[in-house]
Length: 172
Image (tube, rainbow, N blue to C red; front, side, top):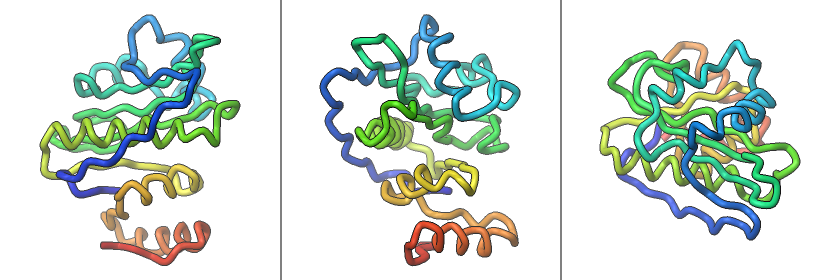
């Protein structure tokens, strides 16, 4: 998916008891617990993610009472799995802990990451998602991301996604 590079989005207020902040290396174990709840360990490298992340663009939300990282999104530049062209910037590794859903935490980290990408000023930004991650895709669409038709299979895939989301297709 891609979006207009010059359009910031509103970042919702962080709910009481939670703190939006940047990832710190001391968060590594806690962060990996969250990431591995969504992706198997062999699909994710923290070292590569840190190396590719844009300065000020590795967002986490901490549940203050427990100290647990419960949501994350990060911005990157370079070759990780989302985009293979090292000149492109991207948003990725978005996940919210299943015990902390329906609080808008995903929207907060994704909106924060989008605004970081906008400040970076590149002409095009990208995000990738598996087709079955419908909640995430719906959020991305709500925040201005649009399908990127980069292969001949994309129109059929997106038609199916829009149908599952019960939305009218928007390929603008």
